Length: 254
Ligand code: G
Ligand code: G
Ligand code: MN
Ligand code: NA
Image 1: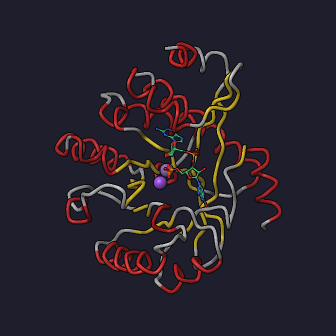
Image 2: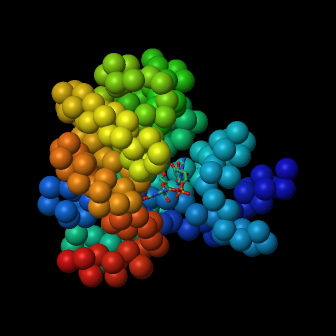
């Protein structure tokens, strides 16, 4: 397949770009973290969204080298941002199912943190519910190793799978990211509010911090505040931005 062939050269031809979306602490309304989101600028086809190429990268195994590049490059860029601005923001990186099972993930993470001179608690790995459930025993073992390193562990897209919080208790998790399909207002808004509140109460009872994704309106923000949601991410606060634009945004929001 053509897309797969060009994906092979994307790293060496410098076609990937990293964008960063701010994460906001809802008590202080301060930016406390960033999520790294990959972008692919294809020389002929233009910008190809991750939803289109990440599955191909997963299937072909290329996700292992792409994932390693994302980890390394985003930690390097965070180090530069901290050196320039003095702001100790946390960095959240998406880790795919296949990467999670890779024998070298733990070593990779350790090496990348060392190279960028970042304390391990400043890095958070986002794992999807489905990736965790694929092989629970292996996932638990790898997550324990990662937790021993001191990195933060988050479940991404929470609410889209069917595992529920009871299963998630088996994993040493710190953060739950509530999927934007729950947070975005839609026709079922009223029903979703009950779900959001229930998730938050249960997550807090399990000592998990909750990040609401896809926060687009003040109205939903007010509900999140009412329900004691910890952090928010979404277009209401900021779009994903390349590092130079993010730096300007950070200065303006001081
Ligand atoms: O940024 P955008 O909304 O287009 O991202 C779409 C999806 O792509 C999200 O689900 C996100 O988790 C995934 N994604 C973005 N960057 C990465 C990455 O670096 N690695 C992996 N595995 N997934 C990513
Ligand atoms: O699946 P994951 O959570 O990793 O990916 C986050 C995706 O959500 C990114 O592709 C990002 O561009 C997108 N996103 C971020 N904020 C918003 C928002 O407020 N609304 C919508 N619809 N998408 C968002
Ligand atoms: Mn994510
Ligand atoms: Na998500």
